[in-house]
Amino acid sequence: MRCWNCGKRLRVKAKHCAYCEAPVESAPKKGEIDAVLEFLGQMPPDAMEELRAAFEGSKTAEEFADRILVGECPNCGGTDVGNCENDPEIDELLVGRCYQCGQFWCTECRRLLNRDAPTCECWTSDD
Image (cartoon, rainbow, N blue to C red; front, side, top):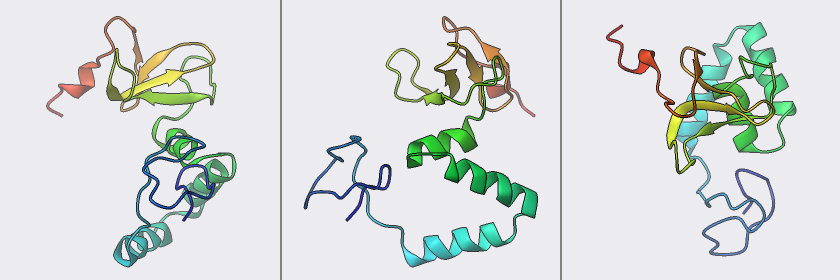
């Protein structure tokens, strides 16, 4: 079995990857694969090309997810980004972080956020 995140071979009964520390997860089920293939088949060609470019430019599954879900930094345009879900001080999936300039932003509306108060107005909006 291989790690879903870095592609390295896993030890038998491993709970985490010895290389990237990603949790070991089972392979997707046939129904899940079919649903993804159906979704991809409905995408416009330009969106599919963007998805392909993000995939090819990513070294790990986590980096690919950040390219798609977090996007480029709205402050400097940097691509070395991540979310703050596992940051013990922030612990919020919807907060993006740029490792190049240090900026935080809302991944929903792209509004720049302050580290001292990393919350966004759009999270409480009734829209």
